[in-house]
Length: 228
Image (cartoon, rainbow, N blue to C red):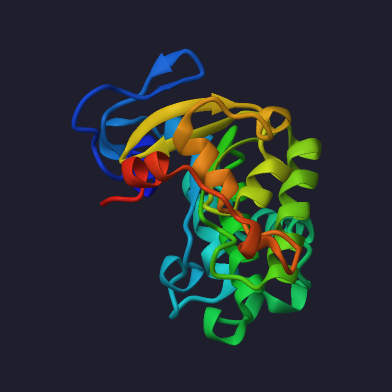
């Protein structure tokens, strides 16, 4: 799934096939895409610690895409940085801090604000809540949903957490060994057709102390889909 995300973003050239965005086929790598194509399609990575330059301040991190994509300098750029911090619900006082001085949730919000700085149409979110605790992750999901409504954003949201997927996605694609095996809606998650999806959903822990004792899985499905 992460390899697919990087191929969509142009970080890794696809071995076969192509990426069509907004009715146009994109170049196989980021180098072969126009600046406007790069601007419209951004990616937010799983680990903000490695995605953010530890030597730069939040102001520097958010200012770079504003200058690169929009030519902003000085006062207009500074004003837009304040707007971006407001959008991701971070205090403006953080703009002179470096990533090491921020919490995990704050780092991921900066990571997301950097993507928003480009004014994109689509943001690829690669496991962006997996390194966060449950409460912080829930706040990030609420933020993403709010920004989606306000800015008319689209997301490609990659996650192993099915409750998060159900909360934010309109369409769900299930992959197994790098291949798409089923596409369903959140409403249809209770009745998937593919046996792997059935096994996947049946394995989700439930708030029931007897859940594990009562768990029954098809041995054929387990043999077919629990091998590496």
